[in-house]
Image 1 (tube, one colour):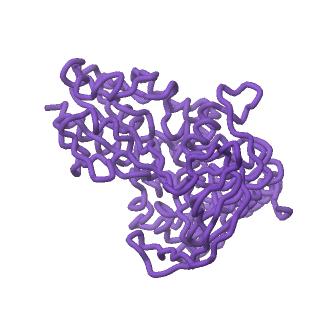
Image 2 (image 1 turned 135 degrees about the horizontal axis):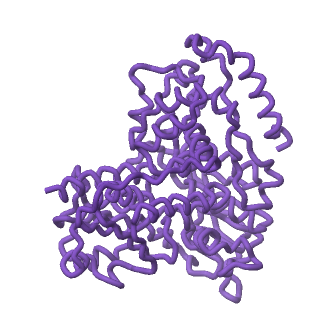
Image 3 (image 1 turned 60 degrees about the horizontal axis):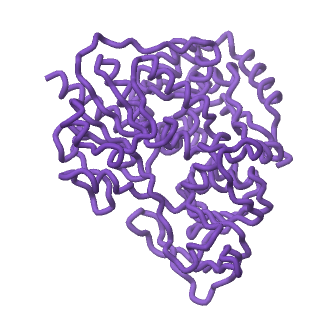
Length: 497
């Protein structure tokens, strides 16, 4: 932790580096661009950020952003675009930023993406647009690719902080009505694209605030809620209506929206919000939570603000988080900030197989989360009051790859041991909520409850479309947005007829 470089030191170095090449930007050759060092992200010091809920990454300065953009080789085949689920014209916006034209750069992004401030923060760029980057391949290090996500975040923040956000134009009213179920990333993209075409759009949200997983699932220290709210404010300024505390399937059946309420089409973007559990002995003890509940209390209900919170949260000293994805990292890092003395991340494979972002794993370690790899829970033991007191764990070794392509964990016989805990957070994934399936006759789903769609995101019922995690299973913000964009195109095509 002592090696942390201060934001001021990073900014000063970037100013000097940019000054050294400022006069020769236009003449930079590929070999010169490869010599420009990748810009580090300024961050809060780990010892300080453990004690607050503020955003960890502080964002690039203009000088850093331009230097990072200058690293782009301007490849003719632009492999980065193919890696982007919404196909942002990445070379164009990066080139504009390198020239210092931030307005042109953000306009390029927003022609394809409604949520650049969100995607720039939470999308796994290292496995999407940055993975095929020619710079990373040229340097034989994928982590040295152009930091496309950080540049996207910089531009979105520049637009917001300089009052440059513009409300997208809306075409004349068509008289058509569309219902969007769920206000997560897929739903917001569909709502924006349909409203642009002049259709009346109503979003139905089950919670008391819109935003979906961006609001209840992703912690403040990764995605400030004011950013999500500004995106929603843009939608309402366009004329999108948002109805909260409305559970489709209970408040109103989905088919009634079509047959009785006069909607011409429906988009289902309800996500994957039904937590999975391990179904092992003692899992119903007090102090064992799904990551969904834990993070919703901490994020949506602001349980971290103990003096003013609308909800209580368990007082923990020794916390075990089960899982190795981004949600597990979010839960572990939240537990640290809520005052736990020790937080253990228990994962049955090795760190190499963890689906979490490399950056999130590194941040968790810096903040003191203790990693227990090749281990997993076998049963939970409670005290006389029914509260979890210990967790029996078992050790694993890796065998042959399974259907996910990762090496399968194989239990080591006789390796059981006990771990003292007072809180366990289960973060092993989510399934789709069965409510809509149970209350909508004729809606085809997989055996896991995911809605089946065709290549235009249409479900088995005419005029009903779906996308995001309810189709994909638990995925990413940008993949959900890509599905939302396809669905919006299909609905626009349907309504134009």
